[in-house]
Image 1 (cartoon, rainbow, N blue to C red):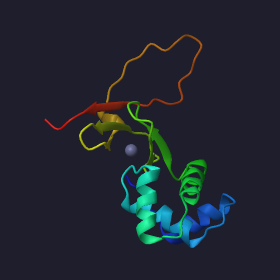
Image 2: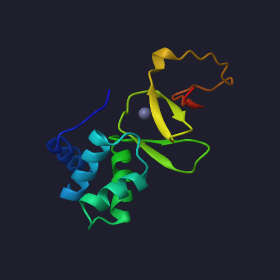
Image 3: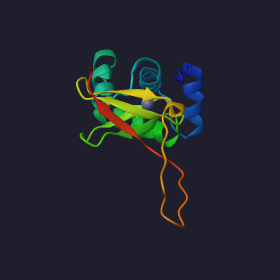
Image 4: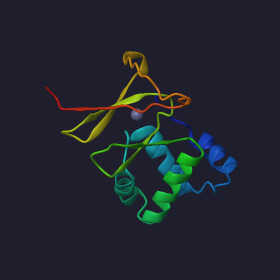
Amino acid sequence: MRSCLTSEEIKTRLSLAGVNPTAQRIAICRFVLCDADHPTADDVKTWADKNFPMVSRATVYNTLNTLVQVKILKEVRVSHSNKVMYDSNTEHHYHFFDETSGKLIDIDPDRVEVKADLPKGFKMHEMEIVFKGKVK
Ligand SMILES: [Zn+2]
């Protein structure tokens, strides 16, 4: 499920995290949470340039990092690219990477079965899976 917070909720979350909820930061949050789909920082910067020409790249990066720290966003890395994508779906899920468009598509973990013999003495707390492919 996509979590689309209201501006007021975003303001509260940022304030609680000790971040000054400026109009720019709130707008960036709204874009990432409500309108964008696994955007990269460059996608967010491109959007910000159109809507808030005064937003610097540093503000975009800092805002995204802050949102990750306060767990409003999750970072996703796809191995073939060095780009970080930002995920507003913070529930446990996997991804399908469309190699043609470069887009990530969420996959419900209930639709994936994995069996693994973990190394002795370890306990797993997270599992990340990225399937890669193209349109048939
Ligand atoms: Zn996702």
